[in-house]
Each structure stands twice: as C-alpha cells, then as structure tokens.
Length: 224
Image 1 (cartoon, rainbow, N blue to C red):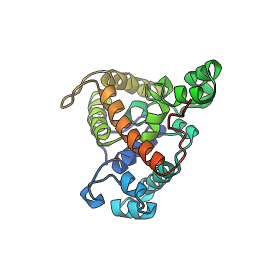
Image 2: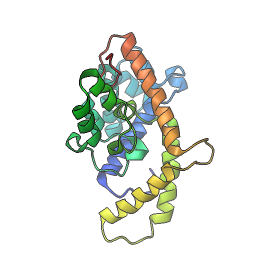
Image 3: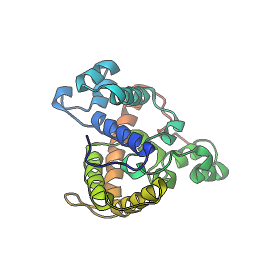
C-alpha cells in the first residue's frame, strides 16, 4: 500500500502501470540477474514469468499485456494508453487526434521520415517523452524517484482544501512539473533527464531483441 492518495482514477491506473513496468524492467537474482523482460524475450513463457514474480490480480494482467506487447513489437496507438510513468501520471489519457507533433510531422514529411520524426521526438502530450520512450516503460530508478516525489507531494498537499478534483489535480501537476525539471538528492542531473536516460536504456534492449529476432516494431527507427 502507498502512503499517499492520488487525485484521479486515471492517475491510480497509471501508477499501477508504472509499478509493473518497473518490476519487469528490474534485474533480480530469481531471474538470473536479468530483467523479467529479458528472460521472457529469451524464451520463458509469459505466464511463467508472471508466476516467478508472484504477481496477481490487476498487476498480473498488466504484466501479461506489457510482456506480450514487447514480444510482438508493439503498436503506435499504445503510446496513447495509460503509460508514461511519473511524468505523465497526472495527465489525461492522450489522443492522437490532439497530438500536435503527429499532425506536424505528417504535414511536413513522408514515409520513414514521418515515422522516425514522430516515434523519436520529444512530445508534450507525453510530458516530454517520445512515443518510443513511453513504450520502453519505467525502470527501477524512475520508480524510486516516483515514490519519493509522491510521498513528498502528499505531505505538502494532503491537508489543503480544493474546490474540485480538477483543482486538486492541477495543484499536484504543477508541483510535479517543477520537481521533474530540478535535480534530486542521490542522483546527478535533472529528474527528467535521469528518467529519459533510463527509458532509453530500456528501449535499446527492446530494439536489440526485435532486431536479433526479426520482429517488426513500430518503435524502431526505420531506414529512410
């Protein structure tokens, strides 16, 4: 159980998503010092990976979706689901119809250039992450940072009175954004850069697996 209460239902669901992403992107002794994602990509059945991690209920369902998605190479539309970790935790669910970056690259480029510009571009609809980074998922560093941040926000905001859920979410979001663009104890650099670096490492591993196994992935840079 967490020591804080999140202001919206979508935030709660995103929080669960981030937690499971971090679990499957963390190396454990029980998975031979590899991440559950890696052992699944190495041939361990999805169900066996979930049993090994002793995940149940909603967490098991999320893990199954994430692992199967990674094995299949993913779909671009999935970037608009409840993903994006701590940076997107308090945002509404994104919609491609409202994605300015997507419409911009479609109007200015074509073919592989369109795909690459969209997949790898920082996008405000994902709080500065690229769609590929969203797909790669959170890791243990992001999860650690999220716990510290959310507990701290709760201590500051729990006793404040807000007129509506929207006002509460706006107050949380403002402080979360401020936190993400500043350094944090125990780490070098801004929070947002630390998260980008970890997600890029996760993405590199996924892309290497797809390339080695001939899996087409929407989140790989295509040849122009």
